[in-house]
Image (cartoon, rainbow, N blue to C red):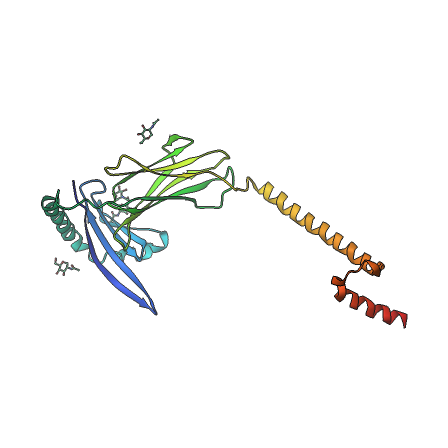
Length: 263
Ligand SMILES: *[C@@H]1O[C@H](CO)[C@@H](O)[C@H](O)[C@H]1NC(C)=O
Ligand SMILES: *[C@@H]1O[C@H](CO)[C@@H](O)[C@H](O)[C@H]1NC(C)=O
Ligand SMILES: *[C@@H]1O[C@H](CO)[C@@H](O)[C@H](O)[C@H]1NC(C)=O
Ligand SMILES: *[C@@H]1O[C@H](CO)[C@@H](O)[C@H](O)[C@H]1NC(C)=O
């Protein structure tokens, strides 16, 4: 048994805008298995930066954050102190609490979605979202039609949520074809049964061509209905006996005209 030690360094700032409070948090964790350390800067439940312990650089989650990278971890000099504190806790807690307290575990949730609207045969990215993770030790693999996929896979690293769980994303580059199946397989540490999310291309527009055909058919149907409508309107003008009570409004317009013509 082992422990994860997390230091919620501080909700550094509570940005109070009207009634909506936002939390900026710096979360450092250490654990016995890979990744043995992690440090992320969160804005509410969104990651802004993660820290690269290998060369002490800050990795922005999206390129737009690059300009704030220098200010992302303002107390860099203290990171190694904090890390030592975390490792200290980890050692002590493991010794004291093993076989005393139950091991904390999250039930991982897996969801799959595509980055772009699906078009058969066109490049897309399949996103595997894994939530409610605790501790942040997972192995994520992909299968296509039941066979392991090794190429075109990237992982996001772990995001620290405000409820003290973690989230992660895995991405697979695909060009989906009909009847293909994709699976995102999530192995949690010490859990023999993986959590699996499936995705199949369904209700998709196979190509731009079909979309154009459907659009053309729609317009054609509209034109046909318009002509039918005009024919009925014409018949109404031609032969008043065809007119039912429902057409009183049209009738009143017509009769006015007739009265005008007759007089
Ligand atoms: C962290 O920095 C090292 C050394 O430059 C690099 O090899 C590694 O890819 C970086 N890690 C990430 C997640 O960018
Ligand atoms: C650290 O490594 C990353 C990824 O390899 C690189 O982009 C960055 O420039 C490096 N930063 C420093 C301070 O060496
Ligand atoms: C950082 O460490 C210095 C001493 O090493 C200490 O005086 C300072 O309070 C620390 N800052 C934080 C934010 O922990
Ligand atoms: C597929 O990958 C899983 C997990 O990495 C591995 O256990 C399994 O043996 C692989 N299957 C094949 C047929 O390579």
